[in-house]
Image 1 (tube, rainbow, N blue to C red):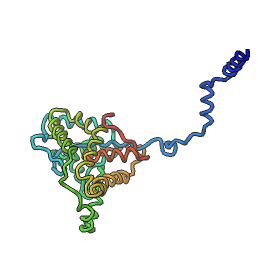
Image 2: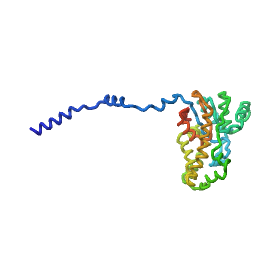
Image 3: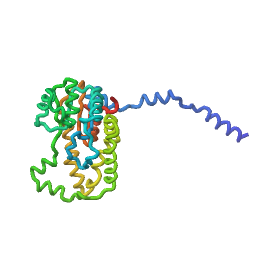
Image 4: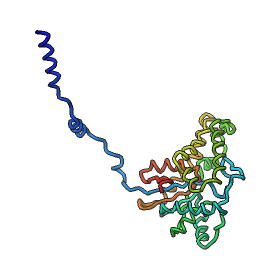
Length: 291
């Protein structure tokens, strides 16, 4: 009997326990202090920015990776001429109020734009004419904003070339990197395909997050890790710095929250500009393929 009584007591204790309900959990959570959202401290509406990363239509040959002559297209001849029109009409869906271009201040680009409005420069292949000026004129915008910048490495070299050389003298510029070799194969194949696909489709792929990250990743191969940090320092003073300055110039345009800023730059810049714009409390990054 003692054993039975003991078991009965245990069972009674167990069944007397109250099982917590979902409402109890909600009450507990509601009483827990919550952190304030970061969003409550900044304006809900931000200036929308569309970055259109592009290849250079006139092939100036200034990039590290050189394009084979057989893979170059002519945007002034069919079918690419019509494809440029399709691309322009697609970008105009963004309805930009300000257009920023890859150009240094002081080189007369707004004078060139006025000349373009008067019928000049229509046969120039440069994307600043074929995209930026064409879109600006169609939307009756009166100003282009040159936002390119020279780099800190350029400033340091001009100020003291011997000092700058000491910062980069240990970099192995000829180092072999299997990842760069793989990238070159991709780039070569990509350049062959541009002739066979529509420019709009090509631009949608080129301006995807995956492609932007790949493009920026190319700068993290090769000599980047050589010279006891000098390769990394060089990238910081040169490429990262240039794009940080470009982003600074976008801010200096002083767009309002109602503005819609179109940025047309070589696609190598687009990955870093994406990072700056997405992190900025002032701007909203608009995905190219969302138009």
